Length: 451
Image (cartoon, rainbow, N blue to C red):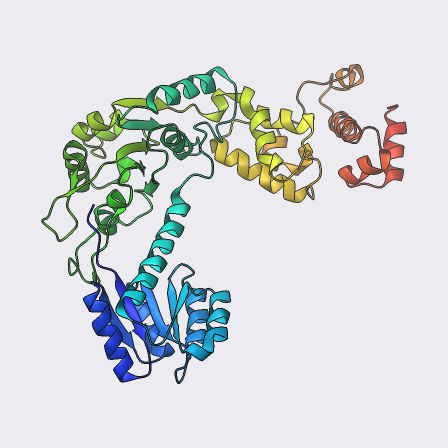
């Protein structure tokens, strides 16, 4: 994979030093930009794609240390190298504490400058890669559940992960398509390389081609330097294309060629670039319907559909809901009552696993990170579930009529029972969960003859 020329910004108020830096950077194979003080440097950074900054400490208007602080507020990853005199090492160390990548002392030679820049750029690259790499290598991380549907999914991932085949993941929104793609990558021989995800629906059509394939300098207005795309970034690893049916048809043709030939061309370029990647695509639509509607090229579909994984909706695997709920809540060290679990199971979950996670996060906040009860769940989940099958003989008797007071008694009995079970019979804690006084709880227990 070819390397793009890096742009280095040199900042110094001495014209002779600035000229020396410019010449040195060009000789080292970089594209140099210059600024005579911190304020001018910020303007350059805001209007150009700068890969690294080499700045003096002492300058008028805005010195190097203040420039560093301003850069860190706007771009935490941009490498900054401080140039300082022999007697100002303490100032350089202060700059390191404020986020500088490195420092070099005057006088310095070209080789010393090159080493510092290469080291800073390499570290910046590692930071970018770390954002893409998985935190864990297990191919099943995050895939929770033991239902027959989940067992089949685990088996499919195990089968296809070691292969080179492209994969098409089909499932409703919120079912975890990217999670499955990451699991396939993590179980593959490419697991130590990058997993790069692109949501084709989230990027404007006119920008998507450049995002995927990169562009050459001058390819279009604003293309002030060459830029690699996600294909080149994922070289050696896995490229995940989510919502593939939202990609423009013309771009789908270019994608098909890249898959067939393992070659790409940047926007505005005519030089083929070889890439070695595995592509996993995903859609929340029926692929056949998308083809009929002109949203998906049929030839691209066949190229992607070498191995297909269909994700089940959450309502089709309700036996996994309790395990999923406890998995999400474990991050917050929050428990959930059996009645609340039952309420979750009764709901149809149109937003699937993503909706479940959001609902539980909200419930944990409302409960004060205590035990989640049915009243902490959204009203639409509890409204139709409140009059479900009675759990005691007294409730069965009370449910033999449609009278509203009887319905209120059923619900109150159930909530009180759940609160007492959740607190091991502690009346004070149960009252807090129910958001009533302990005296009111004792009254309700007596009223309903609950021991």
